[in-house]
Length: 155
Image (cartoon, rainbow, N blue to C red; front, side, top):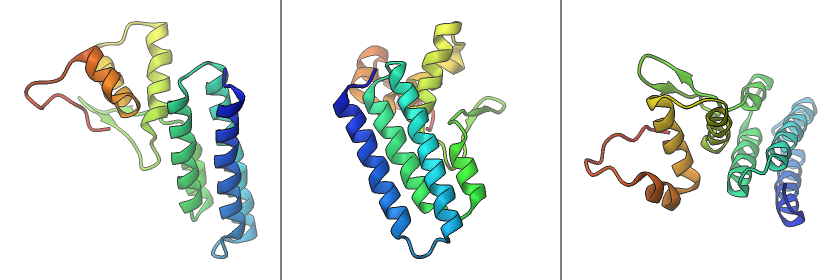
């Protein structure tokens, strides 16, 4: 559960983004309303992750990145894509992500999946790599480093 300071930071990110959206003269009023609605959806999702006690560094990463994406969106289709959860697709030996993918959110999904069942080798490697985005020192300590410089999956 997020404390009041964490909730305050998430709220500050939202309010700043909303202020930027409302003052953007290049967007129509309809697009501004859609963007504010998308922002509210992301805020609710992040608060839900907070209620599940996920690390704040993941939550703030999601909020900052998705907020910036919403600010940069020019179409309702882009907003809909931004609202999609950051779940990669498996494609013949590798994971594919889209332009609105946020590794911190993917790490949350891998965490949830690993609680339900053991991850296979590819899933465990992917979980390691996306978790390393938010927790580089901790992941290096847990997993060690790859002496060959290879084996990491591009996130």
